[in-house]
Structures are given as structure tokens and as C-alpha cells.
Amino acid sequence: MDEIPNVLACDVGNSAVHFAHVKGDDVTDVHVVRVGELSRLGAELAELWAEIPAPRKLVAASVNPAALKALEAAVGEALGEDVLVVGRDLPLPIETDVADPTSVGVDRLCSAVAAYDRLGAACVVADFGTAVTVDCIDDRGAFLGGAILPGLGMSAECLEEKTAQLPHVRIRQPDWVFGKDTDQAIIGGIVAGARGALRELVEAYATELGQWPIVILTGADAGIVCERPGTGELVQAVVPDLAVRGVALAYYNSLLK
Image (cartoon, rainbow, N blue to C red; front, side, top):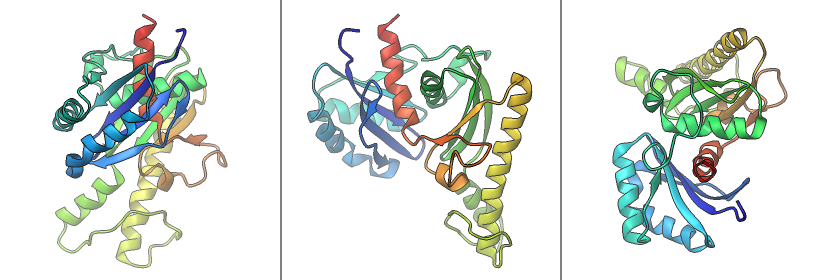
């Protein structure tokens, strides 16, 4: 491409819409609008859109049909533009080794292609959001599949709702080993469980691959699961904007086909 287009990339998730201006490898700060606050989405998108020079496109990946519908309505009303949706208007961004690629959350595929585009090697992308996904990409850049488990907040909510006496807790980085009260016990258990699941899955993936993959974390709770990436042997980096990078990359890849 003679000129890299500017992309307003939107990751429409279960709990929030994340969006940013992407141009090649450059990404602005990611804006976040919670699903319960989508009435302000149009104004925030319009403010960012006005700062983006032409040529420009608005691209979205969604795992939340209702929120995507709200996004498209907000964009039409505030910007008078159409939204290019990955998997609907644009091809899926990465080769897959699964029976039905359309059944895989498109956010997972966007994060996977962004990680492989940067690394060019076998890697694992673990997204600690509303749900947790731990996915593997091989040396060829093919998405092999992965695992899905409840997110940290969802686990805490389930314990509160399904038991008679366990309280609501705010998940945070535990600075203790032995939980000295119920809150500490719940937080420590949920965070340790997430870390243990990550390690178990990465070890299983490494056995199948015949090599140890690079491990990248993303999602709102990634910093709780791994406070200091790169200092241990498991997680190499935490990349908060991985999904929006992948959304833009899905558009760029479509221009090359």
C-alpha cells in the first residue's frame, strides 16, 4: 500500500466497547465505553473520528450482537458512516485449523493475528476479560484453537450468587499467601486458579507444539494475573490494546488480497 489508511478500530465485547485510532503499528490511547453507557458512544466516536485524517475507515469486531447494533446506530447517526465488520464485511483475519472458523469469537482471532503479526512465531494469547480465553497460534501463523473459562469477576459473582454466605469481593492483586479472612480467601483462590489454568494450558500447548510458545496476555484483568511480565519464565508481555490492533490488521489484510 502506498499509504497506510487510518482505522478507527472497535472491539465490541460483552462488557464494553474498546476503540482507538490505529495507523500501522501506531495506536492511540484506547477509549472504553461500558455496555450500560452506550448512549454516550456516538459522541465519543465522533470526537475521535474528527481527529483522524483521511483516508480513514471505521472497522469493528464483535462478540455482542446487541452492542454491535448500538455501535452501528451510533456511527450512522453521529458520523454518517458505515461500519466494516470483521467476519461479515471483511474476511476473518487469520488462517485457522478448526472445523468451523465462524464459530470462534472474532475477538480471539483478531488478538491472535495481532500477536502473530508482531512475533512471527508460535505464541499463546490469553485474554483475561469477562471470560478468559487461552488460544494458541503455531509457527505458520495458524490459529489452532484454545480454551474458554469464566473470567475473574464472573467467578466472584458466581460464588456470591450460588452460596448462602460468601460475600461480593473486588478482585485485585493478592499480596498474601494465606487468606486470613473470607475476602482474601476468595480473591486468592480465584487469582491462583486463573494463574494455574494459564500455566496448565500453556504447558499442554507446548507439548503439542514441541516447543515453548511466547505467551502474551491482554484483557482488563491481565495485570492482576501477571503483575510483572517478562520477569518469569511464563508470560513475556501484557498488551492491553491487542484486540484493537487485530481489528485494524483485519482491514489491512483485506486490502492485500
